[in-house]
Length: 467
Ligand SMILES: [Fe+2]
Image (cartoon, rainbow, N blue to C red; front, side, top):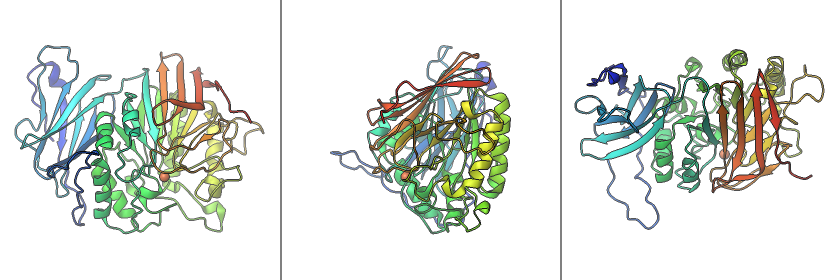
């Protein structure tokens, strides 16, 4: 751990932990793909500075991870400083950090000012740079924008990533299928190579350097199609997630689940791992689990805690929850109905139905439900409304439909994503959930509003598709 050495009193509150963390792996180093080249341009020589991205943002901190085959350093500046000539903040203060055995550098930047825009750059000894930008969250109520999406071809350079970046998001929740390598071998090098290919995409690199990420895997980036906790690649997937991803603390690290949670303004975001602990569809359906016992207990405690503290709760649940339509395939909550009922009962008993929003991926569609079809709580009286469900995918994979029915219908186009925009004055929290097309425009009918005050939210649907 090193403390930075600022020259002014203002900066002396900063404490920055620089951790060039040695990887725990004993596997071979990952294969580094050359950076993708935009159409019409000639590829240049491979740079020793491969990629950088950021995540785990809070009101006072964020994490930068970079891949570099030679030493590098991180510089952070306020984008619009109040003081003239603010000091340049650099880690290490002198010289450069040496990458670990996997060529990874990790900077845990702490002691920042809430609600402040910072620019940063990773620079190597040859003067090559990758720059980024982050806006720290504010403490308490404030207006923010969260993006969410899933499912892109490995290394995709789709323009959808530019459309997402243009939204000036505070955080982007990637809900999985970050790549489609379908790795079924316990070989960390394969997972590292997959991340390297994605992060070499110019448009994805731009997005992840300018919007902090909160990333949860789904089936194709954890294992193969419809993967389970028994996937042979599970240890390697878990190991490389920790090595490569700038992530929030992982409270279930002991079990291998990468579930995590964070607070943005007065909204609690709970991100569950529906792959690494998932059991097969064994004949005794009561023993089937999506979350596994430890994660289920953690999730229930998160819900109980959030119910008493936050006007709005977001549950990132990657796979389809609503499964009453004729078109429901196996990789949904349908086969795990007892666990679904247990969770739905808790959400109902906690009074969270009106103030919980589920964000989902996996199915390659945008689909939304205003709560008409999402209640699976046996304890709730019939016709009790469930919570808002918003699916947003695919980033650029081909399309597919799963689950439903959805009150707002669904959209099957490539290049889709979702947004949750919050305006919060501390008394009333207004949330708008939208599905977006590749240009970033709202898809018809894919808009649900929540007006939240005094422990409940009123759901408004501006337009419904005709039946
Ligand atoms: Fe997918």
